[in-house]
Length: 134
Image 1 (cartoon, rainbow, N blue to C red):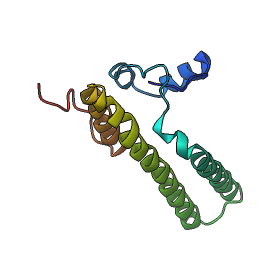
Image 2: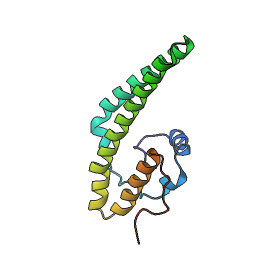
Image 3: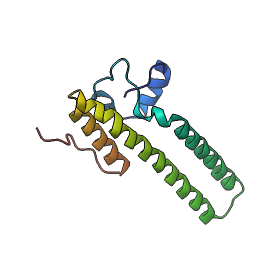
């Protein structure tokens, strides 16, 4: 998996453990001066994630207070929608930036396969061995 410059190896190894090995070995490493496409939206993404942290804490309080099940389910649904919105923003930036850059450098196939695999996993569909024909 590709990480921004400056991420410690300890942090990256913890993150890599959460991702299947097949997703970390396919795509070539970014060029030395590479900047992730989501960088322009970084502040907005961090704000959204902070709000989601608050939602999670709120849901935990609801459970501790033994609030009505349907109210908790509504809050988990809102949290899922917020997570999906962040995922879509990062995906859009990845396709418009990283994948476009890879295509310009002749590396599009690996990046396209990677995007298809992550979308399939997100939708709960099995990842095929290869999404492109030879």
